[in-house]
Image (tube, rainbow, N blue to C red; front, side):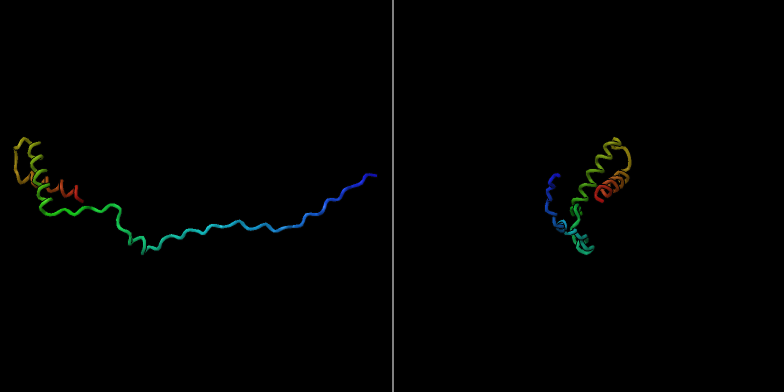
Amino acid sequence: MKEVKKTPAKKAVAKAAPVQKPVAKAAPKAVAAAKPAAKKKPEISPEQRYKMIEQAAYFIAERHGFNGDSAYFWSLAEAEVGHRLS
């Protein structure tokens, strides 16, 4: 008869639970609202705005061959500059 070697029984060992990383919490709304806007519009002085309208009105009049009403060109320039600044 053959001799059977008995291997020692393995002891049951509890496996360690994997380490869990802390879950990042969402920032409170008050903190998120307190952050400055990413793109802040530069402040334009009234003099700078006037010069921009003046130049735009000139170029609009030039496109029309300087034929027409200057007040009409000025109003178009005001609308154009206002749109660009908003």
